[in-house]
Image 1 (cartoon, rainbow, N blue to C red):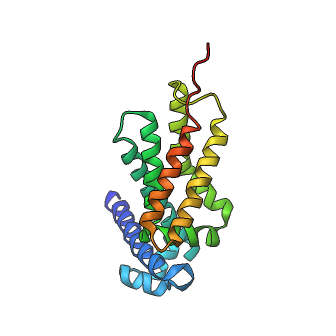
Image 2: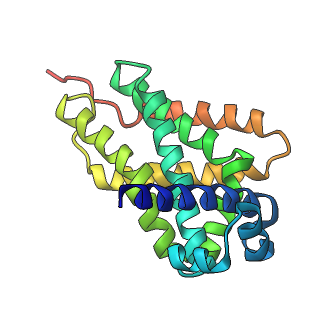
Length: 199
């Protein structure tokens, strides 16, 4: 039984990786299930068994992309012990990862179009927004974040980061655009700082 579960898990992982490559290169509309299953060495039946449909497969691929980005955000944030640097590093990691060719088409372009904004936002909430919320709550608990609505701040920052990623993805000089974005984010985060103590 254990081997069967391991085999099924390996089958799914292989199919997701192959599908991610096809969705990245060709986009959702042009990616053919026949090509995906052939490259993965599987059958359409196996795909339908595990994912139900092409859209079901795409959703799992998108979630894998978002999970990978969230892991990078956590890794970058953990490089500092200072909470504001953690927040800044995490924001930078999110934008940089989102605009990489391996992620941007699936996450920024096809994701909302194929699955709809409601589903896309629910997946974003489960990964990147969750980390942002946890960081801000920690900062507020430590007194490093002024008394303000964490929920409002999460949505404002998340919206800004997603919009910045969309903009950078279309820029001819993505590297310069990313640098400009991070400069603006640094300035923006100053506005969320703890207010000065008044006597």
